[in-house]
Each structure stands twice: as structure tokens, then as C-alpha cells.
Length: 433
Image (cartoon, rainbow, N blue to C red):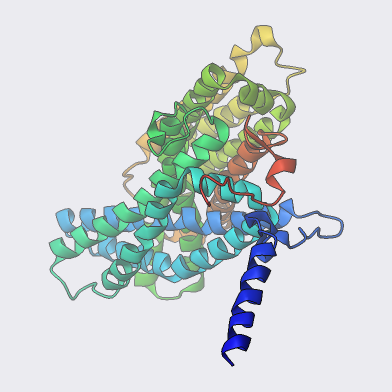
């Protein structure tokens, strides 16, 4: 028995000694064949999952921001409508929170499986940022449950502070993730301190404003549908009030988007000329289509503002504002074959005029007197608000699509191509000895 045992140990040791060393890239998890979906490849699968996640995530940031802000207004003014609005917005955020996280998990799994090299490279480079960003949800989830279920059960001021904490953590996640987003466009500053990236600040502001803007406009459209479905006078009054408030918040945010967007494009022109040329060159038609969507929001917003008080017949200014906005956006959307480089300023004049006139219209109608409450039952107002809400959501997602497409063949602009991103992640031995 002793001899046999010794022989067994010796043989086992010899087998281990002569066994080939298995590299990390040869492990089962890294050797699965990358699947290709017939006809559509695999990039669209990842894109669709991320698009669904981003839509819910952006709505979440917008909804909790609106909820906390409106609760603060209710605390100061004592408005029962504002308090009810805050509770409804917080509840909508609560209901979609898990759905957004579910889509995120599916999207990340698809990304790791189909574009393993890109996922592994980015996570390795930004591991502290990624760890902190996703670690926030360990704190955020219980605070959200507490916040949503403590309306009316906690002192108003304390509950408002709790809502600000929830909104702050959710926003912090966006602040961190945009650092990664900025790196994909300008990868010169690949560090945890991604705020040093010149694109970071205008990109972050653009996304934060956009999240609030399209969420508010979408909720305005939803409020008109809810008002249309109810026969209760008090419910109808509240939904009309909510639609009116959301319309103004959404339009103000939308009017700020072209200003910050211009700053973002200017920064790209100065720090990443190749990406800029792709954005306005190869994908210039996409940018024109985006301006057309923004134009639909502005024109629809003017129509909705006029419809609140009986339509265009009741306001000559509303008629003029809508026509000028439409003409200005048509000029802004003219193709490059018409707006040649020597008259390029005409495009900005048209866009600026549309923004300015809409801003004046919003200011004039900010707190209108003599509202026709039953106007929300009007077909024109209801359709315009629903249209503006849907188009604003499409515009926000389309902006992200253009940003991704402008990288061309790169997964990380200037660093990692689509073909190399598609391969297996082979970690350096310095990271995984």
C-alpha cells in the first residue's frame, strides 16, 4: 500500500509536471465561438438591449429629478397638486427601476459575450469608476423603497431631503457613466478623473438636461390622455395642471439643448477633429434629421401653448410664433447642397430664431390667466402634446444613436476598432498572472 501510494504520488506529480500550461485565453469561458445572428449580425442585438436600458434609465433620472423638485416646491408653497405630482413621479420611477436594471444586465451579458475584448478592456481601464457606479445601487435600491413608501408617513421636510438623496445618487450614477461615454469619443484622458476630458462637461450637461426635458414632455402627453379618459372634474383639473406644468418644464429644457449642443460640437471640433468631421460629414444627414425632430418639438410646443386657451383664434402672437418657429427650423434643416459653406450662418440664424421665438412664447404663457380648463379635451391640444412627448423621447434616443455611429469603425474612437472589439478578451499577464 505504501509503495502503491508512493507510486501514485510520483505519477501524479509527473503528470502535473508534464501537463501543458493553460493560458487564460484558452479557458472555456474565453473559447466559446462568437455567435453571428443570421442576416443582422450581432451589433444590433447589443444596440437594441442598450437602447431599451438607456430609455428607461434616462426616464428614471428625469422622473426622480422632477419628483424631488416638485416636492421641494410643494414644501415651500403648500400646493397639494405639486405634492401629488411628486408622489406620482416618484412612483413611476419606482415601477420602472427594476425593469431598467434587468435590461442593463441583459445588455452587459450580450456585450461581454459578443464584444468581449471591448468590454474587458474598458472595465479593466475604468475598474474603480465602474465599481463605484454600480455599487451605488446597493445604497440606492433600499433608499428608493423607503422614499416611495413613506409619503405622508414622514415629516415633509425630512421626506424631501430623502428624495433629494435618492435623486442625487441616481444622478451621480449618470455623472460617472458619462465619464466612460466621453472616453469612447476622446480617449486621450483614460483615467478615473474623467472630468479632465474636454468633452465630459458639455456631454454631461446635455444628457442631464435632455433627461428632464423629454421625460417632462412625455408625461405631459400622458396627462392629457389620462384627462381624456376621466369623467371626474377634479381628476380632469389635476391632469390638465400636470400637463401644463410638464409642457413648460419640457420646453425650457428643450430650448437649452441646442445651446449646449453647439458648445459640445465646438469642443469636438477643437479636440477631436476626426470625430467631428465624421459627425457633420459622413453622418451630416443624420444631424439634419435630428434638427427636424427638434423642430417638430418646438412647433408642437407652440401649438400646445396656443391650444391651452382655446386655440390659435384666441392669440395672434401664438399664430405668429408658430409660423416663425416653423420657418426657422425649415431653414435650419436645409441640406448642405442648399446651405453652402459661404452662407452657413443662415442655418444658425434659423435655429436661433426658432429657439428665441419659442422662448418668448413660453415666457408669455408661463402663468396664464383665464385658462380654458376644458381645452384639454380638444383634439388639437391633446394630439400636439402626445406628439411632442413621443417625438422628444425619439429625439433623445436618436441623439445617442448618432453619437455612436459617428465613431465609424471604432468601438473606442482612435483606439479599438469594431473588428478587434469583437474578439475574445485576452487579459495581459501583468493583470492576471
